[in-house]
Amino acid sequence: MKVFITGGTGFVGRTLIESLSAERHRIVLLTRHPEKASFPENVEVIGGDPTEPGPWQEKAVLCEAAVNLAGASIFTRWSNRAKERILNSRVFTTQNLVDSFDRKKSRTKLLINASAVGFYGSRGDEELDETSPPGNDFLAGVTRDWEGEAEKAENYGVRVIRCRFGIVLGKHGGALATMVRPFRFGVGASFGSGKQWFSWIHERDLARILLFLIDKKDPAGPINAAAPHPVQNRELAKTIGRVLHRPVWPSVPGFVLKLYLGEFAESLLTGQKVLPKKLTRAGFRFEYPLLEEALQDLLGKNKGKE
Ligand SMILES: NC(=O)c1ccc[n+]([C@@H]2O[C@H](COP(=O)([O-])OP(=O)(O)OC[C@H]3O[C@@H](n4cnc5c(N)ncnc54)[C@H](OP(=O)(O)O)[C@@H]3O)[C@@H](O)[C@H]2O)c1
Image (cartoon, rainbow, N blue to C red; front, side, top):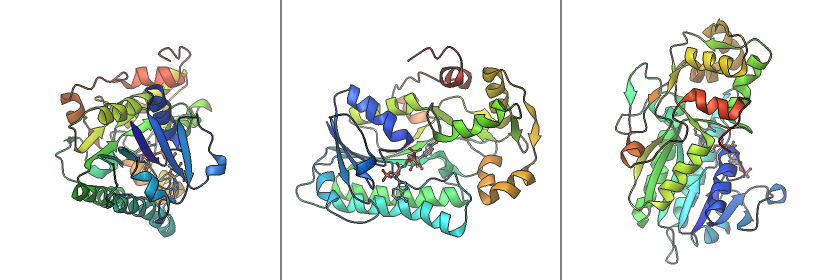
């Protein structure tokens, strides 16, 4: 199949492209910086800014499936300008991609739109599946608007999957590198109460989920792409410490995090317990359902399953 990808130069996109290539799919990748992109031969790199309409839209619709990953990083201090960039980069990209399906020659039948478990907002111990309503903080608002734009592709006969990623744990980049740094220096700790839930996914399982959704004919709507065993923040810190053989200190108080990180700290001090109900029901099998195994693979000495 020919798959169009926005944001494919990023952390998630690179692993996905490897997996798609291994399955012999052809890929058209849109990037704002084609001069920097180096990919295998089955990847056609095209230049363009997805937040603006452009000639790239003609190429997009020649693909049977589209995976929309583009978006400015949220891992930053949330100034008003940063918040605007986080929202607009996602909403405008999705609007332009969806607008491109309104062409007679469009061959696109499937849109997998990235979203995030942040959709559910801060929810204490509540178990959340795809039927749970959205939260009401900044990230919940961003994902709601982002998903709302993606849903409009249904008007053009496109099957739309709103794929709510957990925090993606991977070897090269993403949140894990930042999370483990203090542990490597021997000063790792949990945050705030330590009771907030952390819904995560191993990068290879996420790529496998995206391939599973491309291959299957029926899944649609929201899909939680998070491992079936989320953990509380305190357990997360203990597990990182155990895998790295490093001490774990008492929790960093919430006000200290807020001082350094501003509003972004809220996303570390609160969380959500998200379950992948639809994937489990559809028969998807996680290679890394448990955090300790995932971290052993990514950080431990026996990086076994590769
Ligand atoms: N990583 C996670 O833990 C996680 C969790 C939940 C949801 N997600 C979502 O999944 C998607 C992919 O995540 P990722 O970690 O792979 O992100 P990433 O590494 O930051 O890559 C995102 C890509 O989006 C493009 N991009 C960045 N800023 C942009 C802007 N202002 N306007 C338009 N395009 C821009 C870039 O592509 P070019 O520079 O090549 O154009 C970049 O490679 C993101 O939308 C993210 O919100 C990620």
